[in-house]
Length: 220
Image 1 (cartoon, rainbow, N blue to C red):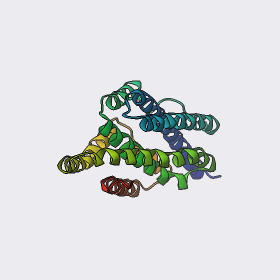
Image 2: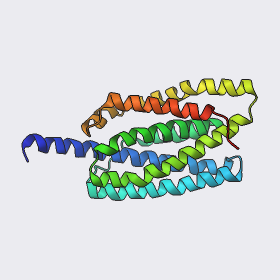
Image 3: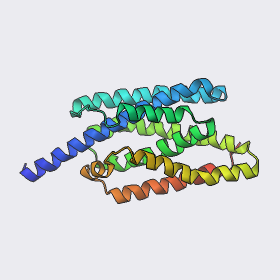
Image 4: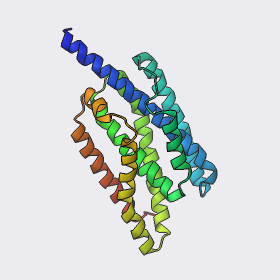
């Protein structure tokens, strides 16, 4: 192994290690936010859906922590304690519709799309550590989208159109807030071999897809 290859491998491992820490922190924050929301969820089906997700996210955190130990990730948090508190505070004060929007349309749908762009570039162990979490996230997104569509189906037409019209800016605002946290995501993604511009294009396309899905009528 030449020096250049060793450096590239070292850069990859350092960056992927940080991304794994970030993914794990985000999953734990999702778990905590959903756990807090259970008591105020509007009905039994919503409470059961959130409870299932709490269990899923707990499993994801355990899977990823076990893999990080084997991978040798530096365990220092990427998101600070203060930033974690701010994120949880944000979700804590949302009404049900906005919670569904921010959690499932933004964090889950767009976040999982970004992770999916990295999976083909990852080492076998990292790929396996992400397999179950990404499969579960499909169920979580479907739950959130369907619940939001239920909410929309109960709105008056004008209120529904106004709500849908605000969604793109709401997602963009949350995205800007995340980037304002000072995480150098571009450098991390590029260090593991991702084309950051293409990754951003994919996330934007996913945003358009999920917004279109939400706007379609609820199927009985």
